[in-house]
Amino acid sequence: LAKTTQPISMDSYEGQEVNITCSHNNIATNDYITWYQQFPSQGPRFIIQGYKTKVTNEVASLFIPADRKSSTLSLPRVSLSDTAVYYCLVGVASGTYKYIFGTGTRLKVLA
Amino acid sequence: GAVVSQHPSRVICKSGTSVKIECRSLDFQATTMFWYRQFPKQSLMLMATSNEGSKATYEQGVEKDKFLINHASLTLSTLTVTSAHPEDSSFYICSAPRGGLAGYEQYFGPGTRLTVT
Image 1 (cartoon, helix red, strand yellow):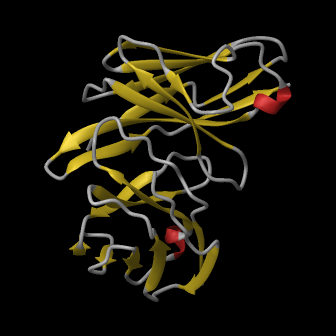
Image 2 (cartoon, rainbow over the protein chains, first blue to last red):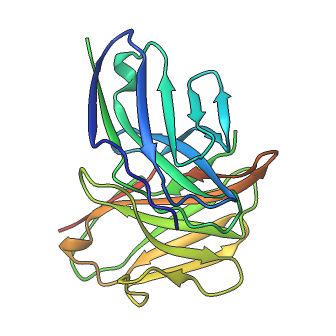
């Protein structure tokens, strides 16, 4: 089970781009990288998933270098509603894979 | 998108009683579901893997006789906290994987807040 390391917390201001980096040095060949967002008293919500290079969707971008030992979630022009905990998860994209959550990054967006 | 529901959303029970939490995949079938527990300001901790038609598998340190899991159908898993104590008060979250073009994605329920008095 790959272990991930993220900054415990980050502060940003509205309208800025936020980049959260996750380290996963022992990622396996078949592992995907997935990011989730969690608001207080809610279940985690899927943000983005990728295997290599760059993935972009309507809410975020995910940058993965060639060695895949880290990944960076990029949130463009954050707003106050983006204040949440962001989790980086690494694992096989299968129906039985057990995701182990790390500490997550507590992002606080300031006005 | 795929939806996973949990019921109840919050429950308060007296110490010594049992509480059942339901997890349903609303628009897809899930032979496997996962149960997590989350204490305030902490990360999610995996408790067990619920398997349809077979016994659940528990993570190390999780008492299987205290946290009974039943995967009754392809869309329903239940977690029963037996003889609950105040230290069992926590936020319980389930998840179910759903296959897609890029592999499987975990869909999480909204969580159940359990308070044991």
